[in-house]
Image (cartoon, rainbow, N blue to C red; front, side):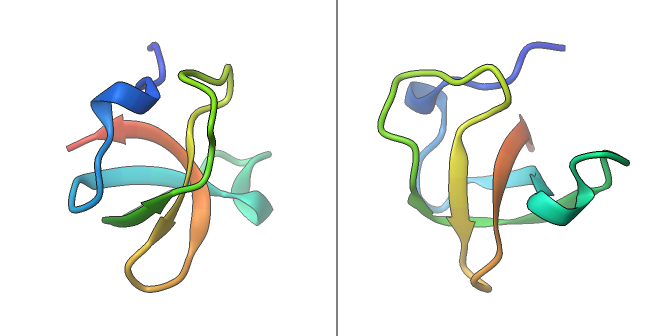
Length: 63
């Protein structure tokens, strides 16, 4: 499964992210993107975003 690129993600998108503390087990957290934190067009582990509830993680899939 390929991770989404920065161009595919925008504020307001509903996404599944993996939080820093869940990187080993891969537990996904669903939320709405508030802000994109990664500046590069892509990243092998996913684009880092901040959700509206303040959680920060890397996008694994767009819903």
